[in-house]
Amino acid sequence: MMRFQNRVVIVTGAGSGIGEAAVRLFLSEGAKVAAVDWNEESLANVERMLLPEYRDQLMAIVADAANLSAVEQMVNGVVGRWHQVNVLFNNAGIEETDSITETTEAMWDRQITINLKSVFACSKFVIPHMQRARGGAIVNTASIEGIVAEPRGAAYVASKGGVVMLTKEMALDYAADNIRVNCVCPGWIDTPMARRSIAKHGGLERMMPEIQRLQPLGRLGTPEEVAKAVLFLASDDASFITGTALMVDGGYTAQ
Image 1 (cartoon, rainbow, N blue to C red):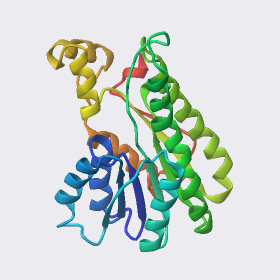
Image 2: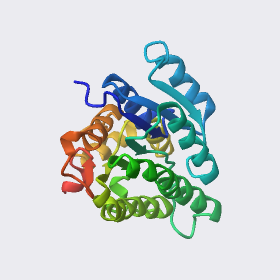
Image 3: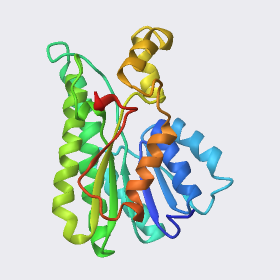
């Protein structure tokens, strides 16, 4: 199935985890993909693995997705090569969890900037191209913690809650332009970021009973499972879906 033949996709946070999985799936379904990440080493690894098979479909761009001038330059580069942007997957994100009183100003600023401002920055420069093309799809990575709070997660919860509400606001603003805007809300997913968090809490063996309690399906999700939800929302299969937050959480938020 080649749902994205002749379509141009930008994926931020493409160097690992959900972003990397999404890049692979979009390429496999015929898309031309701009893989964007601030981490040059991680992005180079993705490029090295995928470029031999997808040389004409892939461009890797090192850029800070929350820096407006860098994003404008990145988008101009994509449009300069491929003349359009049909799908934007805003996936850049970090997690540094603590309570308000223990959260430093730097921690707060990093998470609000990378998790939330990046959605604003990339969408700001991509949407005009979608408007000219009379349509497009934007998918944002939020989190279950944009829907339900957890202790000691102040800045992360605030940033992801912001992504959920910004998704809804953008969906309303651009529905008349045939631009659909949705977000995915992953639960515990087996990504490098989640593994770092698990390590801080004593490791997977210690954390697994708690993860199994929280996620009724009884396991970590995979990056590919989230990426498949992203591709659905970005595809014509979801042509009447906009402004929604899709839980990809193994049942976490059903309880």
